[in-house]
Length: 513
Image (tube, rainbow, N blue to C red):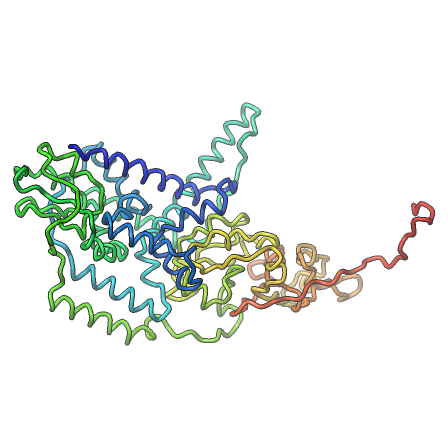
């Protein structure tokens, strides 16, 4: 009971991280500064690791800080920083209050499953595929839930409040549109949320200690932690209260041992022990219940080898795309489709941060390995010419930081005009919506028949923002669309055009009108 204060500290810190992280995903006002977002995401393990691989800078080495923290104190990342872990704890707490939670108990570690998943993830990642990362990274999974489920609910609540306030002539809260264009990511997020609720109620942190690759990796390091939880064999009465409170199922009362590789540092056991039979300190006897047997090790290695041999078949080789719909348009700063798909973990933070919501999650447009990664959906919206928000918040380096000046000439795609479906041709009516919305004036109206004009694209100055495609009124197919550049290029600066050729007015001239 003397160390029960550690739980209070852990709960406060974890809630701060959790609330701020959720708000970052649901905020539509831009209240949270990009610097704060970067500082928050600096400590997310897999995103930090992926970014460090590309930039090789200490500014992206948050994962090293987590490893050092783990070597000292164990898996505190899992109990305080990981948003998915805190979400699990929230549901566990709610189930306890509703009295539907079953008592926890010591369970044997599922070492074969744990290390096979971790080994497969590492080996498949060597082939520049983040398929398993997209499906198992706790931060990315939490991001999908916050972006695809919590954010629409937050918007609906905001809009309801806005309507109520308008009844009293108050416009302090403004209404925002709720845009959901891709249902597969929503269904996946909902299904996974239902799964973790079930696990939180009946299995506690089973996901963290069996399926989560970050938990498995940190568990390996935590076995050598300097400070550990230990059981005092003399003071312990084997009452089992600590095992009932342990949501990780890692306290073996019979042997009076703690499997510290699975301990998530929640400190619930300190509060539950009436005899102070659980301590926390330096110099603990070695306890390696998670050592892999030779058979398990060879099976893990065999799985990894199989993954290597089949990687090209399962995930497909990177080939130069052919045809109009070969590849989706990737956001500015993503360099190329290969750079983007090999580093994006589908956390959907860029989707939440995008002001116009042109960034939308996909399903299979990038193939199996790029499931749920976002693309530029120009049928829904367009990319604001001066916005670089997605490049400021991306935690993995899939979208690199760019300035507004760089974006002005960054060509992510090129507009293509299909003459035979343009309403000027099919209905002989005046349009020009694409040209009016083009920020660089890459789309120019040229004479067609009589007084009619049709679009002409100057591909050298087109940046692929999609304003023309979004504005085009033809349905279901657009008469003008953006064809993706597999590698982003540099466009020319648009030339200044003088519409009315008039002589410059001299200061000595009379007033011109």
